[in-house]
Length: 487
Image 1 (tube, one colour):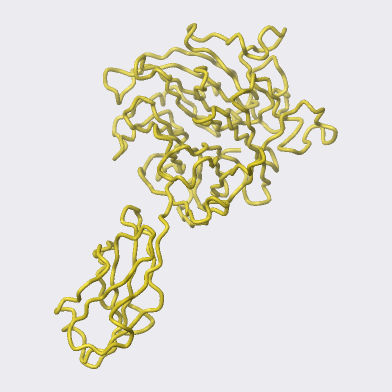
Image 2: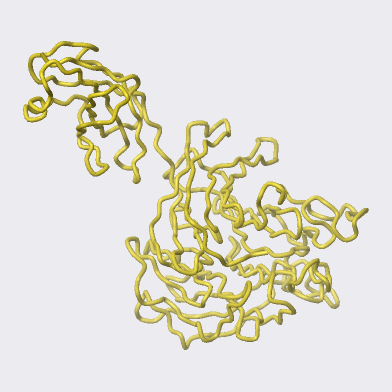
């Protein structure tokens, strides 16, 4: 199931509970808004640093690092059907894109059929040539849902295509287990040796009578998102479930293909059709699953984090649920298994994750109007702040100099707040317009502020700290406030 709806944004932070990540807090930084019905985010691998965002309606737009460019990279809205779960699903840039300018897209055409097509960039690097299309593959879809739609180039240079089982419910034609159709499969094709493509000789079903040689793995219901670990080459497949179970399937880089991931015999680790004795021992079971009873209904697969900006996240596989908005991480347990860690609870309709050239991660919130692209970041670990002087309950005859000590951490901006009540509603603060205006660990009160305080009045003060490199600011407040009396 995958629905295109808009949800309000409400982001709450959760601590990562894995042993190596106990102090890290995940945060979403919006980088682009007003992108309707986002379906995928990726990079071209050409050193430009750009992000390419596919929209359900048939457009690909470019984020140049500061804004989404007004002119689409590609606009095929006249070729795309968008009803139900249809639309433009993904784009994959050829490993030699910087040289040959080729990229591939997956969409449903006006007849509702799946089309994989190759296009070329124009002389303008931010605009493709709309007349360069070469149809690579077309597959008739019996129903409007379960189209798959993900394209990825693997470490071997071949193009991988995720195909859903053809839709409806329960895979009524048993497509996922039938070798004579590419529905319900992971495909692997060679787009370099022939036009539109060749079937790699090493594919596991080549030469088997009646089988489609393009098939690399079978038994998939709707592999909406799958990705390769850029460090190891392992494949993670997030397969959207039927009534109860969402699953993550895994294929090691050493695989020679041929895995059967179980659908429709099984949904996750549980018998589906038949309801008993469904696994003869040849099925490859998911590494992780979760139930719809927790509020989820449709898994959105992501990436294993291999960037350099957030070392505490290194090696975590990120995924989310479209219905609940919960972002989770799959953490290796050191014994060959994985543990699911809830990482960030949101009210976002998360349709996709994305990865930039450096391995940093992004996600898309889908909405017909206010779709948003977020960058995954972390909140810095802030240090406790110890107030030094003046001493508590000091009686002062001149403007004081406030001093404090941060206990390590990443605090590099501070604010001093003054209040006339211990409940602390500041009547004045160095923090104006949400900006930390003091970067030292002391602050001398100006005479103009001192003169505003009535004689004999007790004044309470505190200090707040932040890491100025984090936006929005995460702020830590010193412990119990101190006070002084103006004589």
